[in-house]
Length: 291
Ligand SMILES: [Zn+2]
Image 1: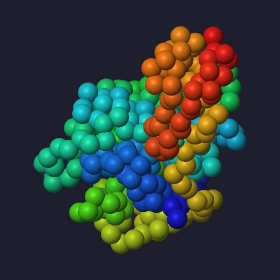
Image 2 (image 1 turned 30 degrees about the horizontal axis):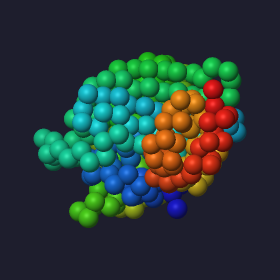
Image 3 (image 1 turned 180 degrees about the horizontal axis):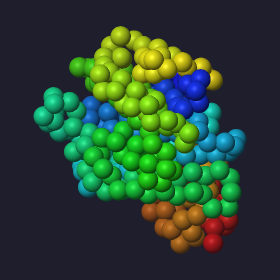
């Protein structure tokens, strides 16, 4: 079971989120038949998404991360809530690129340059929408840039997905360290120095480190206090009703066209591949409800 842990340092200078998302990214890989570089790209985005979702307040709040780039993936999205549920979508899941100069999956190239959009819907009439240019396409850098530019919160964001030779996901997860406004320079320098010499996320996955161990390791030299540990999972909230509403919103003319063309409609949820089929009689009912 995947888990997310929240912690603070006792001095109150840093807030830390760490998540193990191996199960979530494996589920996404299976639903979308993700290639290794797409598992890495969408897996990193969903890892950030699930952590950022738990920063939201409110039972019905959702957080959507969207990356639109000129790389071959073109578009990716992650939708999460405050309870650790997340779902993801990748427009072109079959992207295959040579490894980058460091011998790693080339997420930056697969994403390309473009925009990172952050939509926070906390149940108010208008959702909060933030948008920043993609910096490297490696996702972690881009999320950190977003925190700095849009939320004025300096952050360390580390996201990683380790893909096995059989394309299953061997390890996935990451952490976010947020610097609180009253943090002093000495503590900040101490953190920067320790991060420089840290092992990589891949090494942490290979050691099978738990989120708590990751927090203790990355915050070495600081006294930390665990605030919360929660189960997190891939979950799609699609339903027949939601698909019905989507069809009704097409309008009478289009629904009539479907009735005349094929007499039935099959809709596949883009987040979980669940299929919904509607027959002629249902479509006629939708047409009567449509404008
Ligand atoms: Zn679904």
